[in-house]
Picture 1 (cartoon, one colour):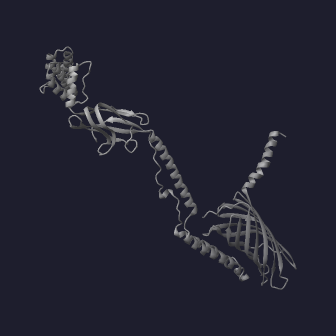
Picture 2 (cartoon, chains in turn blue, cyan; picture 1 turned 120 degrees about the vertical axis):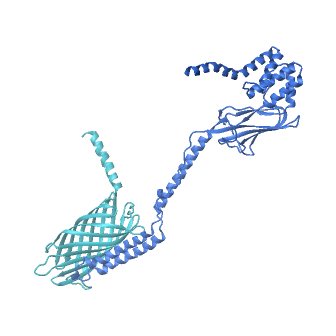
Amino acid sequence: MNRVALMAVVYLSPALAAAQGNTAELLDRAARYHADLDMERELVILRQVISPSSPFVVTHEQRVLAYKYLGAALVVLGQADSGVLYFRAALERDPFVDLETQKFTPAEIAAFNQAKRLTFGLGVRAIAVDTIDPRTERLTFTILSTHAADLRVQLRSAGTATGLTLYAGDNDGPRELQWNGLLADGRLAPSGRYELVLAGVSRLTQQSDSTRLYFSVQQDYPPLEDTLPALHTDELLPEQQPSAVASRELFRGLGIAAAAFLIPRTLANGELRDGGRSLATGVVGVASVAAVAGFIHRRRHREITANIAANSLRRAERVTTNATILKRNRERLDQARLIVAPAAGIGP
Amino acid sequence: MNPRRVLRVTVLLIVGPAALASQVSVQAGVHIARAEHRVLDAGALVPTSGTLFAASLALDVRDRFEIRGEALGGHFAATSTPSVDDHDVAELQVLGAVRVRPWLELQAGPVMRSLSSPLGRQHWTIVRVGAEAHIPLALEHVRGLLGGYWMPLVSVSGLRKPDVALSLTAGVQWLGRRVGIGTVYQLERFDFPSNAGTQRLEEFSALQLRITVWTSIRKPVSPS
């Protein structure tokens, strides 16, 4: 059984690899034929690549390349109109496609330029994962219109209607736009998904086109400190005496008065008759007045001044500490860098 | 003498009193009292009354220990007209106190008292032990006083040691930052042993008005 599986792998592996590699190989051969001006063979190969019945996997880029070479080959064979059609097919699929002057003849390039004039398309080159320091660095977007156009480029948070206009005006061909990481309000772009929207109208054909590039921005900064939470009641001292305290104080004062009243009546020897009772009345009176006055005072002024001051101090300390933490956090946010990466759309 | 030792002693002589002074508070006070002295002897009750004047000086160390000296004098009269029962009183007392709680002091000390009348002079020597509680009241800086003393050693010239010798006080004080004013009622009871079927009883009672000043700012009494 194992032997059968091993033999199947030995026989099938080269075939699978060949299927994947054939399109690239065919395109390489076509390019060599083009350089050797062997257009007949080149056309056979390229038509095989773009044919729907091609047995091989053809990527988007490979198909664009095939159209480009087909157009060039047909121009060389004197079928310029057909060549322009294939060039347009290539441009419609990828506006960034171009003919290298060292590989293609002026006639081919002229036909290609005619195709660009007839085809209106906008393009934006994909960005790679990058980290920029917004204080010193810029993120570069490469955009393109196939020919002269009135172009508007806007950068906005994904899903919103308005954003920062990076460019508005005439454009013809590629253009590099730089973004400093700030939004229209002058603040650093918060973490999230963004889109770069290109919209334009051809100055030659009055056609309109648009395209967009999604990317994500992640702010990268040192970890922020938490501010102190609000003080709970159990962290603060009571600022008012319980109402029972006034009664307790009253009983204390009356207790002193009672003691002064009872001393001559209990400690004094009865045989000495009325020893000191009239004198004790003085303290009884003063203590009673102090007790009642204290009771009234305590009922009217239940606040505990020392505790109020201590609580105010704690609150002030918290406010000061939080202000310091916020200051430190702001300093850390000021050092934020932006990690930019391609994204698939406005959301996961 | 070793120079190092000389230096050390010099530093101690300079720094020691200064350090001690920073922890010591001096109190001076005067009081005036309306007092009664009642004596029952051989069935006859002799009540006398008079006004007493006193001055006191106290040292408070680290708000914990206190030693107080008090000198008192006055005249007791039985009626508005002079009689043989009239007598003068002079008293010197020294009291040591330790504050075991912010509101409670334990006290002890000797009292020397002299009662002089036209008939003779009587000397009292008393050692008293007791406690005084300071009870904060609702009004700020006002406190109540309650004190109780036992006098285990009492020696009175011409008399035997009393069977009962007790004293109680109650009062109210207002304490400012450097001045205090208070009123205190005090009662002392002495029951002497019976002799030939009769018993001598004596009682001193007084209502004092005290004014005290001190050198350092007093800390408020903590509420109990």
